[in-house]
Length: 298
Image 1 (spheres, helix red, strand yellow):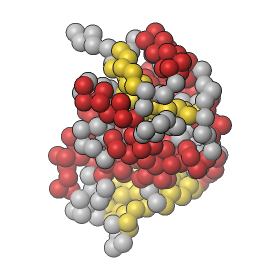
Image 2 (cartoon, one colour):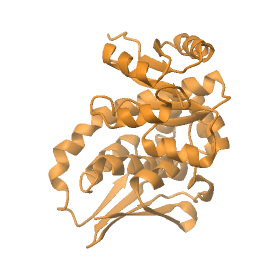
Image 3 (cartoon, helix red, strand yellow):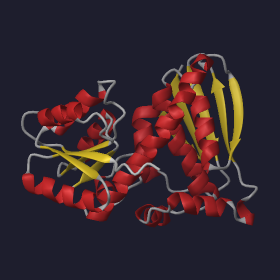
Image 4 (spheres, one colour):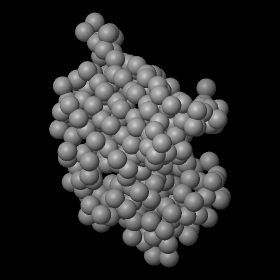
């Protein structure tokens, strides 16, 4: 049995802030490494190569949070470590810059302890899942350019993972595409077919029981025959991917852009905006939100 505590590097130039972060995260079962700026953080990463996650401030002397993020995301040794940026700089453009640079979550001050812990746990969970499945892309990388048309049905979270990584391997930038596919396909399952609302998901994530509730609802008789569908079509200049669920749609418009107020209070609700920035240059919702069409250059 592996009882190793996840190791979190916290980076902030204010000792008071480091003390609060350390108290909160240690209380939740994490091992903490501290650094007072980005330069020291790089030294700590070399000293502790098994760091699992980084929580850092955006505005610091010597090397700020954005500079550190760009350095880490450009280094093969560190680019997969999830980064949570915490800052008072919460304008929409600043949020967009941080997420586009590759951070996992842009946490706007002030925030409460439970939100921080929930986001950290979610980041570690998603990173573990990504590491377990990234080999699927490598194994299928020869698929790029070979598949012209395909159609898939998916129902469970495992189906989502399998289909997302297979389809991404047929695209020119699979690492970018797989994130967006996972987000949109999970939305189709949880919000579309299982009717888990935004507020219900918030409660489930904060209670650390979202996956259990998804699996419970999947097992209900009324949901046993519900599937979502993904179609893939490669054209001369574009790849078009369409995802359609059996739900009644949703008000998708607010989620296309980064909302600093929502990000300051909720551990979710950013996936579609990130998908639009990093995965699919063209993202179009149809049928009231129960169908989304994504296009990428071929």
